[in-house]
Length: 123
Image (cartoon, rainbow, N blue to C red; front, side, top):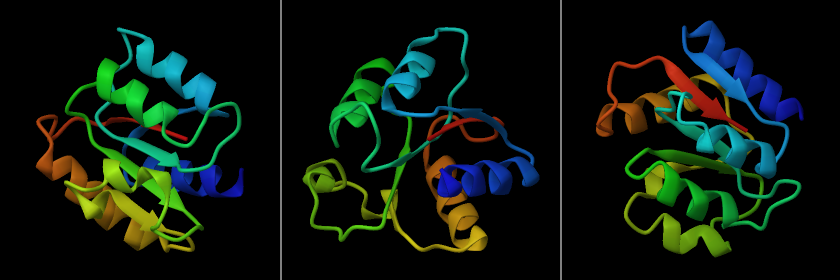
Protein backbone atom coordinates (compact mmCIF):
# COMPACT_ATOMS: atom_id res chain seq x y z
CA UNK A 1 0.00 0.00 0.00
CA UNK A 2 2.84 2.42 0.75
CA UNK A 3 4.28 1.98 -2.74
CA UNK A 4 0.85 2.54 -4.30
CA UNK A 5 0.51 5.83 -2.39
CA UNK A 6 4.06 6.86 -3.36
CA UNK A 7 3.33 6.22 -7.04
CA UNK A 8 0.07 8.15 -6.76
CA UNK A 9 1.75 11.09 -5.01
CA UNK A 10 4.67 11.29 -7.48
CA UNK A 11 2.49 11.11 -10.58
CA UNK A 12 -0.10 13.53 -9.20
CA UNK A 13 2.59 16.02 -8.21
CA UNK A 14 3.94 15.80 -11.76
CA UNK A 15 0.51 16.82 -13.08
CA UNK A 16 -0.92 13.46 -14.08
CA UNK A 17 -4.42 12.32 -13.19
CA UNK A 18 -4.28 8.99 -11.37
CA UNK A 19 -6.97 6.33 -11.15
CA UNK A 20 -6.08 4.28 -8.11
CA UNK A 21 -7.00 0.61 -7.67
CA UNK A 22 -6.72 -1.26 -4.36
CA UNK A 23 -6.09 -4.63 -6.01
CA UNK A 24 -5.93 -6.42 -9.35
CA UNK A 25 -9.68 -7.01 -9.57
CA UNK A 26 -10.41 -3.31 -9.10
CA UNK A 27 -7.73 -2.44 -11.68
CA UNK A 28 -9.40 -4.74 -14.20
CA UNK A 29 -12.76 -3.11 -13.49
CA UNK A 30 -11.29 0.37 -13.99
CA UNK A 31 -9.53 -0.70 -17.18
CA UNK A 32 -12.79 -2.15 -18.49
CA UNK A 33 -14.64 1.15 -18.07
CA UNK A 34 -14.98 2.60 -21.58
CA UNK A 35 -15.20 6.13 -20.13
CA UNK A 36 -11.86 5.86 -18.31
CA UNK A 37 -8.95 7.34 -20.22
CA UNK A 38 -5.88 5.26 -19.54
CA UNK A 39 -2.51 6.10 -21.06
CA UNK A 40 -0.22 4.16 -18.73
CA UNK A 41 -0.71 1.39 -16.22
CA UNK A 42 1.65 1.10 -13.27
CA UNK A 43 1.23 -2.27 -11.60
CA UNK A 44 2.99 -4.29 -8.98
CA UNK A 45 3.75 -7.79 -10.25
CA UNK A 46 2.38 -9.41 -7.10
CA UNK A 47 -0.98 -8.08 -5.91
CA UNK A 48 -4.09 -9.27 -4.14
CA UNK A 49 -6.96 -11.03 -5.94
CA UNK A 50 -5.18 -11.80 -9.23
CA UNK A 51 -2.47 -14.07 -10.53
CA UNK A 52 0.83 -12.46 -11.54
CA UNK A 53 0.10 -12.11 -15.25
CA UNK A 54 -3.70 -11.95 -15.11
CA UNK A 55 -3.96 -8.15 -15.05
CA UNK A 56 -1.41 -7.73 -17.84
CA UNK A 57 -3.18 -10.26 -20.05
CA UNK A 58 -6.52 -8.54 -19.36
CA UNK A 59 -5.06 -5.13 -20.20
CA UNK A 60 -3.51 -6.36 -23.43
CA UNK A 61 -7.03 -7.39 -24.52
CA UNK A 62 -8.98 -4.40 -23.20
CA UNK A 63 -6.34 -1.70 -23.71
CA UNK A 64 -4.17 -2.92 -26.60
CA UNK A 65 -1.05 -0.89 -27.19
CA UNK A 66 -1.18 0.89 -23.84
CA UNK A 67 2.08 0.65 -21.92
CA UNK A 68 2.31 -1.15 -18.60
CA UNK A 69 5.06 -0.36 -16.12
CA UNK A 70 5.59 -3.34 -13.82
CA UNK A 71 7.17 -2.73 -10.43
CA UNK A 72 8.41 -5.43 -8.11
CA UNK A 73 10.71 -6.14 -5.22
CA UNK A 74 11.39 -9.56 -6.72
CA UNK A 75 14.03 -10.36 -9.29
CA UNK A 76 13.43 -9.99 -13.00
CA UNK A 77 13.20 -13.79 -13.32
CA UNK A 78 9.42 -13.88 -12.88
CA UNK A 79 6.48 -15.25 -14.87
CA UNK A 80 6.12 -11.79 -16.42
CA UNK A 81 9.40 -12.14 -18.26
CA UNK A 82 7.62 -13.08 -21.51
CA UNK A 83 5.54 -9.91 -21.21
CA UNK A 84 8.72 -7.84 -21.01
CA UNK A 85 10.53 -9.52 -23.87
CA UNK A 86 9.77 -6.63 -26.23
CA UNK A 87 10.45 -3.89 -23.69
CA UNK A 88 12.71 -4.45 -20.69
CA UNK A 89 12.16 -0.78 -19.77
CA UNK A 90 8.65 -1.81 -18.68
CA UNK A 91 10.08 -3.21 -15.43
CA UNK A 92 11.12 -1.01 -12.50
CA UNK A 93 12.66 -2.86 -9.54
CA UNK A 94 11.90 -1.80 -5.98
CA UNK A 95 13.16 0.17 -4.25
CA UNK A 96 13.05 3.07 -6.70
CA UNK A 97 13.20 6.82 -6.33
CA UNK A 98 10.49 9.25 -7.42
CA UNK A 99 12.84 10.44 -10.16
CA UNK A 100 13.36 6.89 -11.44
CA UNK A 101 9.59 6.38 -11.53
CA UNK A 102 9.01 9.60 -13.46
CA UNK A 103 11.80 8.90 -15.96
CA UNK A 104 10.49 5.40 -16.65
CA UNK A 105 6.85 6.53 -16.88
CA UNK A 106 7.77 9.36 -19.25
CA UNK A 107 9.84 6.99 -21.40
CA UNK A 108 6.92 4.57 -21.78
CA UNK A 109 4.42 7.37 -22.41
CA UNK A 110 6.65 8.93 -25.05
CA UNK A 111 6.83 5.61 -26.88
CA UNK A 112 3.10 5.05 -26.83
CA UNK A 113 0.44 6.37 -29.15
CA UNK A 114 -1.13 8.33 -26.29
CA UNK A 115 1.70 10.86 -25.92
CA UNK A 116 0.57 14.08 -24.28
CA UNK A 117 -2.45 12.82 -22.40
CA UNK A 118 -2.59 13.23 -18.64
CA UNK A 119 -4.61 10.33 -17.31
CA UNK A 120 -3.05 7.24 -15.79
CA UNK A 121 -4.19 4.08 -14.10
CA UNK A 122 -1.93 2.87 -11.37
CA UNK A 123 -1.97 0.08 -8.86
